[in-house]
Length: 334
Image 1 (cartoon, rainbow, N blue to C red):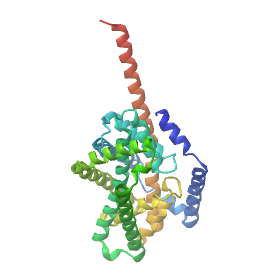
Image 2 (cartoon, rainbow, N blue to C red):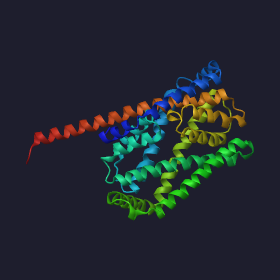
Image 3 (cartoon, one colour):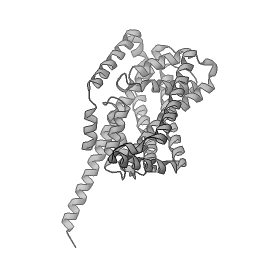
Image 4 (cartoon, rainbow, N blue to C red):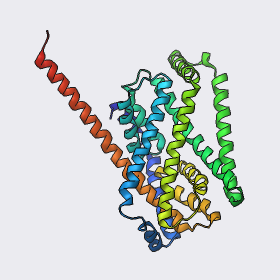
């Protein structure tokens, strides 16, 4: 990992992060108090041992779609990031998600690692921001599809959560557009103004290729849909026998709930939201939470393996560079 990425990540370890870790353990303790632990453990053990490595493999492979999406967006903005370095940085970011206060911390690690391989830092940051925004919007789209397919099964609480999310996304889009249009560039220092010029150039390059934005958004939807299919299968093994369109509604909203900065990685919050959203469909809280915890285990294991993959890629690159340097010194000048 680059020094700048490590420094930025280290600065994020603050009292808030400690409080979030405490809140995570408190959330898990509340789940253990709320639900019978023996039933919860029994439900989790319903997943066959052979399913665990398969689920982790699917999780890691699905994120290759995320790599393609992120690289497309940053390169559309003008970053010029090579494919191998994109994979390396992306998997470092997945690893960073496990330990930093939020997924934004993982994004910082990802951008920091990719920075020295990018032609434009502003393009890299802009593409990463669009990538994150598309992820959230994509989750809303999938939840909307699920809501349309099962409108009668939604209770007032579920409908209120969905409408609140749609209103927040709409407000964010409007505020962002107004900020770009009316921001007083003349009043900022020259260095900041120069950075804003580069950002606007990146915005212009991205806006000139709408087909790339559509392709990236489609890749993001495909990634989230694969993860929904994985959770659907895990839930089926645990005993949740409901149509896929219910998962299309429940899982994205539970994931959005997990983005709130309350616990580390949304652990506990996502499971509680999933149990509440599943309740109108006749799914017991034990099975809903058990499925969520099983997927949390997949995320944690996948994140650790992502770090191992990224580390192996870095060592392999260093070995190749050393080999090239040694070969050059042996051949010598012509």
